[in-house]
Image 1 (tube, rainbow over the protein chains, first blue to last red):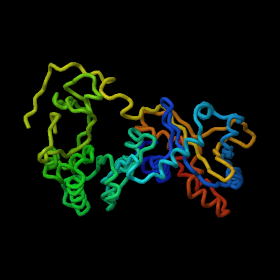
Image 2: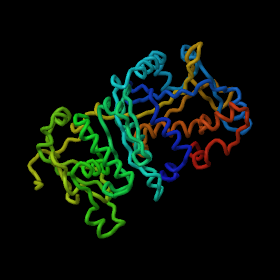
Image 3: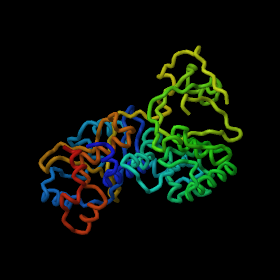
Image 4: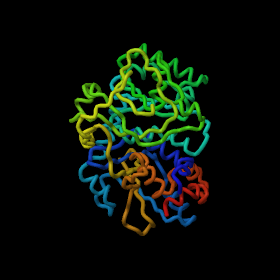
Length: 287
Length: 114
């Protein structure tokens, strides 16, 4: 099945959201993650009887955690129960959840995705939380997901506790004067003014809307001005200035100083003017 | 700002650019459906039929097209439990209604399990 077709499937979307929102997982065994999903008091006798009637070759069984080792269970779980106390792990997560927001590791993920969908590829933007959560979220972190295009913004309480704000890509243009974008600009101006120490990461559209909101300018690339359908998708080398590698977090992570990084780009807009105080650390030939 | 291209910098060693501790690099995802009850913690296992003693949980290896491990876990759930634990199915079961194959998942998602 073509992947975009799968992205558009509502059942797939629902399960992807469930996994993305899953607050409890174990990520300490090398290369393996175990998600815990609470399905409550499911009556499996009725479920199994129904599955038998429709000839679906599946049979479910509840097993008490302490009895798992006596069962003939498949490999990943078999090894997992030898090294991890599942009940203790869930308890640790419950204890974390009971902490006030100020003591949790809060990250705000601000999507900017309008409901309107031009093509199946636009569903990709709906799945950005799943992408970022999968790549970056660790156990005992709280990622709160909002969508400014649906008028969803974090509260002051959340912003006071937030360790970072992530704004990903979007099918929209950051500089368009649409009502939800105007509101997002305003929220970013307030955020910049009231929470100057909170770190933020803008990727693609995210970078463009941050810059456009607080004194810079985002615009269509010249190629898109000439051709409204222009959209660049390629892997390109970014020329990086050495000053970038003097930054504290880069010194911690990078052993050598390259002058180029290879990045995947997919866009038709660019930041044409940086906001005051922003520093330019690299460029590509086209934007 | 004027950009300069510094050709004299060393070659990039990708392994040193970003240590794996800075991002998740899972090769495998497993999903444990559970229920916390007054008499203890239960895990939901499945087999292909009631006589089969070999029990499993949704589990899959990461593939390049997954993009992130969340997609791997979702693929494991959809392909291995065929969506029978979806809220709409569980609601029907709880209300004593019979389920049909059409309730489970759309045919194209069912195709994933083949």
